[in-house]
Amino acid sequence: MTFVKLSASALAMAAMATAASARDQVQIAGSSTVLPYASIVAEAFGDNTDFPTPVVESGGSSAGLKRFCQGVGTEHTDIANASRAIREKEIAACAENGVTDIIEVRIGYDGIVFASQQDGPAFTAFTQSDIFNALAPKVMVDGELVDNPHTMWSDFNADLPDAEILAFIPGTKHGTREVFEEKVIAVGCEETGAMEAMMAAGMSEDDAEDACLEVRTDGKSVDIDGDYTETLASINANQNAIGVFGLSFYENNTDTLKVATMGGVAPSTETIAAGEYPVSRPLFFYVKKAHIGVIPGLKEYVQFFVADEIAGPDSPLATYGLVSDPELAATQAMVAAEETMN
Image (cartoon, rainbow, N blue to C red; front, top):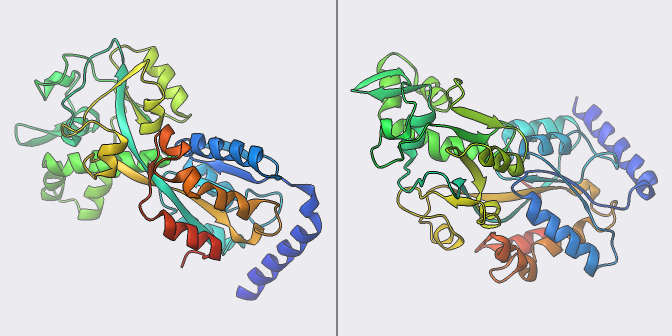
């Protein structure tokens, strides 16, 4: 089996060597959160080097990594943008298709925020427990785990607006959804006692953890499969609604959105860099090492992206909302050496 895979990979590499002239642009797909950063870098790369401007597409972290893992060759993407780390099952899927040498590039940090219309309710007292109580299918009421009866935010927290619950959250193909589940919903499930109640009722810990991540399906929580512009349009059409966005998207739409605090902390590059804002995450892109030296400008684009002038604390990406990685120098060295994931 190993011999067959190695042979297939070798054949793909040979095909790439003869077909390299068929494509001279770096091709990138994936996270809608990373999309604006990658687009800024791609345009600057095209303007400041002799290489063509890379093609950058969105579609979500999972979709981008799925395309990335489909194989080696000029017909396959070179880079996958992701607002979460690549999963073990995705690494395995890559390996099955001959994509065995992957370079993981962490570009910095971002936060996920909850925002509403400028003219809508003011959500200034959110905790993870509030989001869980609003959106989970089962919640704790008077010490019992019951089907979620809440229709208004004020039903369970008098400090929240007397407004109907309606939340537009990232669909399951988005990396933002995983962060939303793990750092908001799961935390709220544990803090409210719901997870403990599930296990007391006979669930295993693993099953309870899975159940904690579920959201209600009665129209109060709505998945958005598109990018943040679709979420913004949904917010604009529903005055009482909240939406989940990346920090940079919110900061570039403050004329139409107002942001909620989480645990009393307002999201900003400063509070994320200081570790104060509780819902932040690293951002990545993944590079197919087998394409370096075959696709013109691929390594040069990656090095350009992580340069201090582009991704450092005083860079264009920082101005747009990226929280610079304090270990950026280590990333630069890793990229220069083309170090792959273990």
